[in-house]
Length: 257
Image (cartoon, rainbow, N blue to C red):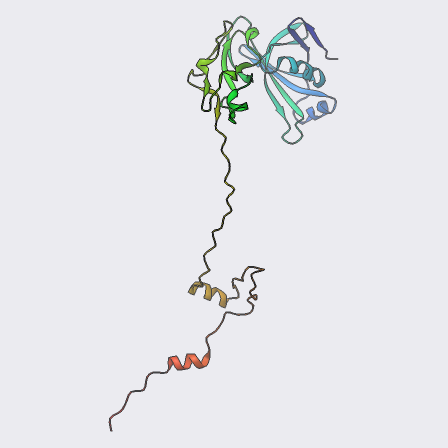
């Protein structure tokens, strides 16, 4: 029904207008169809159906930065894949948003960064490579947008070195709009985690007056298991009556004869 055709670098995906909306679109998904939408400036938003298998084939080629031509009726609509909605658990493709573009006008879009080469600071000096910026903002004609921006890390030979946007080789086809001072890649020293055992002992528990009152209500803190102490049961400890009486008895006062 919907076939993918390839002509040199031109990627064409046949789609159909979609009538089913709302909860009914689950029927389409069970048939291997992905509910999708086309939108863009001076273009009426259109609901379409896309064959999932054919889309996956073309997505492997164009990703989010390549132009895909949606064959809808007698039209071929140039688009970028703007957004993919996936199920949060199963990762199944649920919906696709296509952004209609004008091939004669430059646009801005994010392009993923890809590191190439080998860094001596990593392989010989034990450094850790950090990718500080996964995407860079690029301005170009739609057909000139690169799939990735390659960063050669072989120039990083010492720990602490970094590559900024200003260090990237400029292209005549596109302009990187991200700040020139933005760090893209860096190599830092590897830090060993401390393996010293924690020998600090916990401070002894202090039985306060408030704790004793709680004990009178049956809430008595029990010692930790395996410490060699008998468990505390019953009511809170009471003061010996004899001792209490002796303590409470006032001191005798000698009387005059």
